[in-house]
Length: 105
Ligand SMILES: [Zn+2]
Image (tube, rainbow, N blue to C red; front, side, top):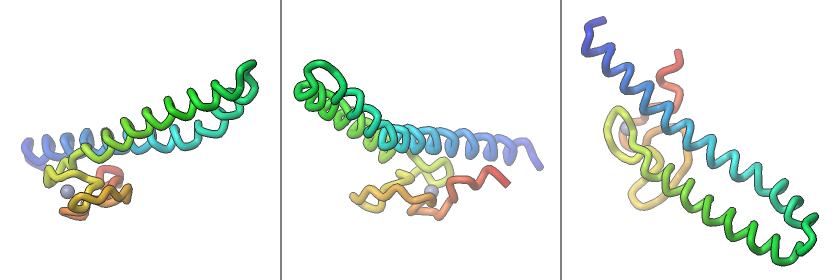
């Protein structure tokens, strides 16, 4: 393997790692929804707490989805999860078909 190929493999791995991290953040948020609501319901002013917790959760979710849609494919440079203007959290790049785990073989 030449040094340029090694560098490309490193860039690819780093880029895919970043995409995977952002995907995990979104999953974590979805899983955290239920415990967050249970915690809010147990608080003394549960009505207000549930509304506040919900709005904060939605805000963080919007940020997480935005970060994910802006994540670029390390191979072709297009947005990894975007198919035109549609956001689709699939495990392959829409433009070049690069798999999310292409660096793990
Ligand atoms: Zn791509």
